[in-house]
Length: 181
Image 1: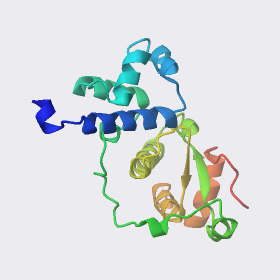
Image 2: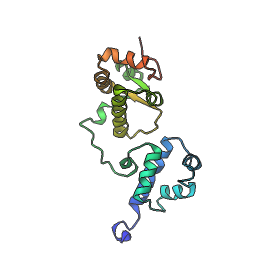
Image 3: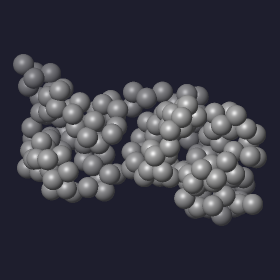
Image 4: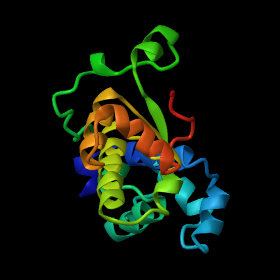
């Protein structure tokens, strides 16, 4: 029985917390999700999932992940994602002006613009940025700030130098804030 495995319903509550966190990152209310999903996800039922009062089936979880445009595993609790050897010490606080100045070419990429581009480089860049979103658990879907190490990989994807990568992204209209000259 489920009650024997998880007597307090802790796992269901944690799933609900993840569902709520992703919905809030998407900046959607329960009613907006219901409307945008053509009433597939009723606000009252989604709210019950988020409060941990109701269990969500795997097929329904898959449909909700597809609706939110996130991998299914990101709707589940736990820290199952590897850190790929990167510690928190490598996170750069861009609100700290001294750190921000030290990050040559840190930029914010317009993910909605990227979705309009096509071709092998656009596809590879999109896959790489999706991997970053999964690693950071950042699924707002509109923008993503890339860090110094991210820019190195992007330069390889774009078959250019690190210095030219920022300009290339700017020319493609992917920089929300124009890169410094």
